[in-house]
Length: 233
Image 1 (cartoon, rainbow, N blue to C red):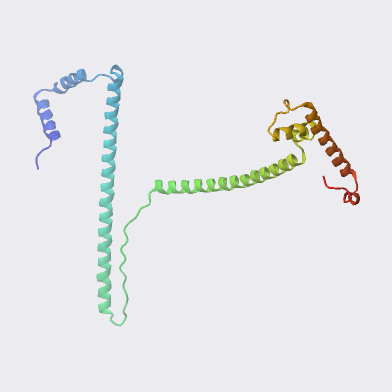
Image 2: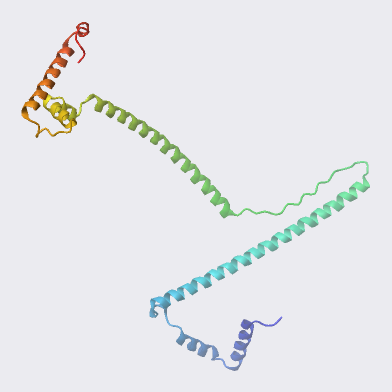
């Protein structure tokens, strides 16, 4: 295979070192002129340089991870090969024993298990997740119980308020119970305004309502046996 650019560059530097000892110093001074400190640059250039550095670091981390993974894969392959060789040796040993002792027949079962290692980080994460799930379930049960209590309280309060509202008459009902207010309401129901109606007609309405209210009040005071004798109003 041919050499890479890095290898060619390395050989070139080594040749230059042999020719001139001050080559590296001059190269360092030359490259320093092109590189400025990050504080001396503009914000846009600073951001670009930081992005490049992040990308290089990410790539280096990925390369390291890939190397570690390759080493693990090699170890697994070696372990599997060792297991297979061991199983083969066991099989040969058992086959020899069976040929020697034909009377005692034994059944063999081949079981090849891949070596599996559980990482500590994964086990810690699983334990942490199980603990968080338990705490959340406890909180959920407490919240459901509190929600039920509050809902029942709200239902009881609404029922009590409804009963109180039904028992206490409103202001409109109290005002509408007077003969004058009843007369005005009847006039409005007929499509007229109480102010434009003549006073004589209005007085007749008020008189009639007052008489009906008086009769109703006396009827309430009368005993139930005598109520049957009176006409319903």
